[in-house]
Amino acid sequence: MNEPMTSRLADADMQAAPAALLRAAIRARELARQTGTPLVVMRDGVVVEQPMPDKADDLNLHQRPPTN
Image 1 (cartoon, rainbow, N blue to C red):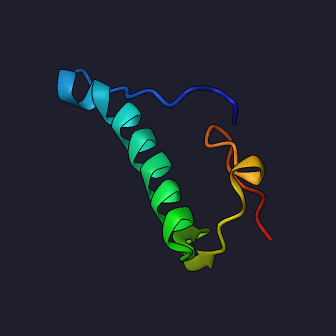
Image 2: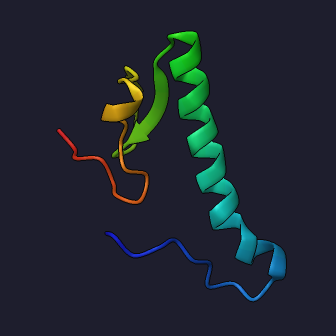
């Protein structure tokens, strides 16, 4: 799961999509942390609210979080 996200589509816009999604995920985490609100994510097809840890405890975005 440590391989970087890449698009297999030939369209140039789609090649930039994985990087844009990563930037959006980082920004969503920053915003949730700043406002003290949980981050809403989908895990295994279920929508869950994830409390935001301090920045030092933040999840590595290149790895899928462990499932419960």
